[in-house]
Image 1 (cartoon, rainbow, N blue to C red):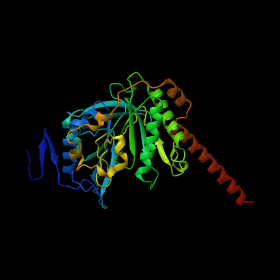
Image 2 (cartoon, rainbow, N blue to C red; image 1 turned 90 degrees about the vertical axis):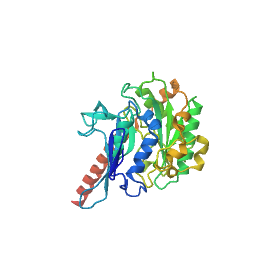
Image 3 (cartoon, rainbow, N blue to C red; image 1 turned 180 degrees about the vertical axis):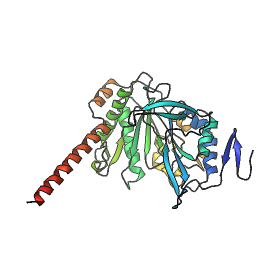
Image 4 (cartoon, rainbow, N blue to C red; image 1 turned 135 degrees about the horizontal axis):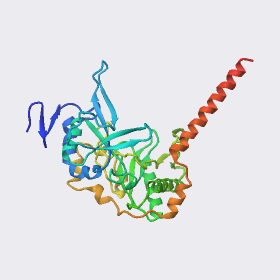
Length: 335
C-alpha cells in the first residue's frame, strides 16, 4: 500500500521516503529502504541472533539545522513488540543494555524507517555470547593513505593466515579500509580467539614492517596501515551489505581476493549494490569452512599484550609524565 507521504511494507508504515538520507549521501530514505529490502535475504543471516547496534542519522531540529548521526545500542522505549531484544551486561558502563535482534524483514524495515543507516552486529551470537564465530581483522589505511595500501596490507594478513593453515573472506568496510573474517569452530574460547587475532596481526606485520603496524596508539603508527585485531569478545563490526554514513552512501561489500586491485569502497552504494550482486550471496560464497585454530598461534597470541589495555597504561604513563614535567616547569619558574 502506498500514499502521498509514505507506504506500508510487511505491516510497517514507512514515512518521509523522499527526504535526503543525510548530507552528501546522494540518496534518499527510500533508497536506503529499497536497499535493505532488496538485500534482506542476504543481510538478515549476518544479523540473526546477534545483539545489534545501529548508526542512525536524524535531522537536527536545533537552530543550526543539519543532521545528527549517533550509535544506538539500547533500543528506545517506543520500539515495537515485533523487534526482539536481548539483555546484555555492559561492564564498561556497569549496566544492562537491551539490544535489538534483527532476525527478519519486519524489524529491518522498521530500523530503516528509523533512519538506521549502519548495522553493527556482535561477533558472537546471543545464544553463545562467549563463543565468537569469526576472527575479524580490520585493515585501516593511514590518514590520507590510498585504499591500495589497505589492499597490500590485507594480502599480508592473507599470507599470515595461509602460513598457519587458515583462510578468510574479505569485504570493503564501506569506509576506507577492509575487513577480513575467518570462521572458526564453535569450541574455540573467546580469550583464545582474541589471542589468535593478535598473533595473526603480529605475523602479518613482520612480513612487511614498513607497510603495516599493530600499534594501537595512533601517533605511534608512523603513517603505516593499522592491523586492528581488537574486534574480540563482545565487539561489533559493520555487517556485510550494511550501508555507511559516508559520502555517496557506500555499502560494506564482499570482494574476491583477486579483484581487490580493481575496486574502491565507493564503488558499492545503496543504489547499485543489489544490481551488482544479481541475487548472489557473495559473502556466504566467499566464506571458507570453519576450522580449529592452531595451538601455536594461540600460544603466541597470549604472549602479546592486549592492545587496549596496553594503550590505557601508556595513556596513564604519558599523563603522569606530563604532570611531572608541568610540576618541574612550575618549580623552575619560581626560582
